[in-house]
Length: 257
Ligand code: 0WD
Image 1: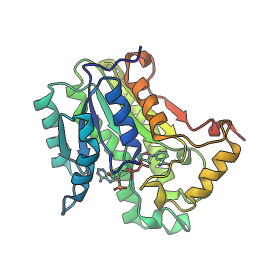
Image 2 (image 1 turned 45 degrees about the horizontal axis):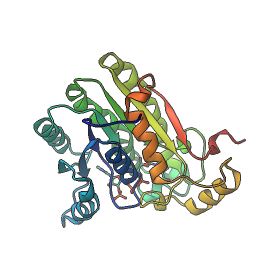
Image 3 (image 1 turned 135 degrees about the vertical axis):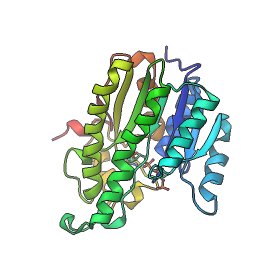
């Protein structure tokens, strides 16, 4: 039985009702987990408002602003986790960023600033969050991140994000190796293309979705809820033997030649 009752889950990356993190938060909640939510702060507080309107139905224990490029905000986030819960069981890393110039055009043209910013937000942030989560995962834990096939193979226009995801997937393995001794498991979910705010920045995403519908064994794209179900499984004791893995939730697209 998939049961997350009594488990505390910190969920990053909810931007709106299309966010994969929203699908994950719903399924963790349905399985009984307590939810804490981070949001990307902006000057007018619009993101916070949107995230609160959406997530209130899950009765989150707290909402905290957390721009992963801001060390103070990361520390404050985990201070809140420590204060409210005392321990953390599940960390959902579900965020990424690349400037438009990193997601279209020639790969050789990507500016240094765009490159470093994207890898800081999309790749290093997993390690940064894991560093702060580690002392709070006193009874073991499950860290889950989101990746895409474009980190393994060349997918048109995925360009800079492909490099970021390759680094992210390798980070999963190194983190799993380090944290296994503390019974902390670290895994990635490689999701098929889903229409979201972030994916709309990738040139030709609709073509990619249509391609998946044609080629993938299941002849459809996946939903945020399907990704959420896999995250709930990976977060649960049912997955107690799984760490350092990338699990494809992509209608089987990855196996096709
Ligand atoms: O097809 C897709 N949508 C796929 C997405 C296929 C496979 C993987 N993924 C991955 C993405 O690369 C990402 O890692 O899933 C993760 C979630 O992406 P999403 O659900 O597609 O996108 P979205 O709903 O836009 O959420 C990403 C959020 C940001 O939203 P916006 O659109 O406002 O950038 O990441 C957050 C932000 O809320 N984010 C940050 N959070 C903290 N600090 C930061 C930051 N600096 N930058 C972006």
